[in-house]
Length: 78
Length: 148
Image (cartoon, rainbow over all chains, first blue to last red; front, side):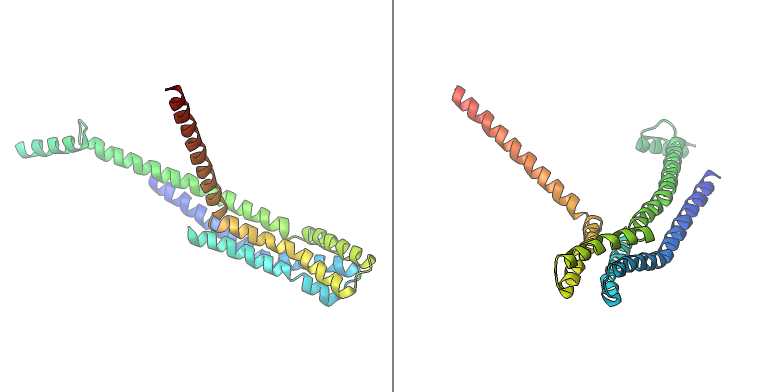
């Protein structure tokens, strides 16, 4: 009985962890987009052209890719 | 009857206990403890890991963070422009300035990726300790030869 309870709780923890990570990964794209737009807006306010501001905000995408690959690789290693 | 008694004695001898049932009970107990440990670890991991990742993501990828970073880059760009820097150079320099944030990702990758920083630090500490021990031994042996 105790063993079954332990297995159920462990399975629940794994499912909860996986679903939370999936949710974070899905919402990440939206958050990056919002941050990028806010960043571009501030640069355009100071007189920078839209094209230059967009080019500068590319670093957000790079940073997102780096963080995602870091997290994924740490999970793969385990 | 004799055979059963002999088998029981052999089991007890191997286990080093008085009763054969104790071995099974101990195994059961240790398995139960292991399962409990796994349950506890999973419980903590499922709470702490998402919170940690959420914190990192929230600190970098939020509207407020983007606005702050944009303000910093814009102030840098404005100062360059006011200082009489040509447009193209000012944009390129701002690009380099913003590129510093990207290198943060590399730092994170290096730190989390293979634990290189930790390993290097450990090696350095070991080397330093070995060096100091050697020095102390040399000092002691030097003192002894002087005394004699």
